[in-house]
Image (cartoon, rainbow, N blue to C red):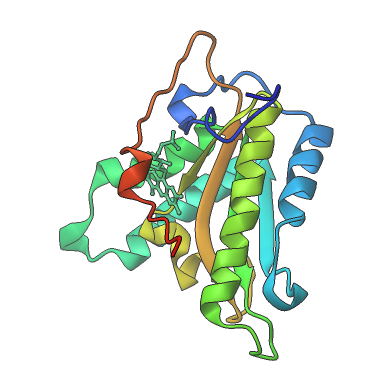
Length: 192
Ligand SMILES: Cc1cc2nc3c(=O)[nH]c(=O)nc-3n(C[C@H](O)[C@H](O)[C@H](O)COP(=O)(O)O)c2cc1C
């Protein structure tokens, strides 16, 4: 495998597996976002929008997500563990990136393509983070994909929230694992 080959070795690292005491330099965050920004887009709409929370701003975000959860979830269905996890995830990661897609106002590109392009940007972001020694986790609980969250972020109705990406260094010694089904189960070659 070529040196610095990130595609198969990237693993999800969740906030509780991150070293909360270790911050991430602004310049590094900038590099990762720049890599995300070079994802492909249909019609060059570049629909991704990243809202980056670090330091004390995470406290505001943590409280915001918990209050949106309360607002969106009928009282009978509310679960304290789910609510608390929203806030704890934010406080457990040094860098928290809310991901939104902004549909091109001309409507010339489908919703599917705008979502796909934004997903390409997120994958670039996570691979870039991994290549630079950082872990990441893309999380999509209903609250973080809700119009209520878009409103909380100050975004107009042309935006669609697509979850949150947590970025940080893994705790020393932490080894994440995950597996895949055999490739043959997902690929068909058509040669004639
Ligand atoms: C679009 C998308 C949304 C995801 N949302 C969640 C989520 O809400 N909760 C979660 O635990 N993992 C979520 N994940 C992460 C997956 O659980 C993780 O990628 C998967 O377990 C494979 O592990 P790996 O990334 O280490 O290969 C999401 C991944 C993607 C691509």
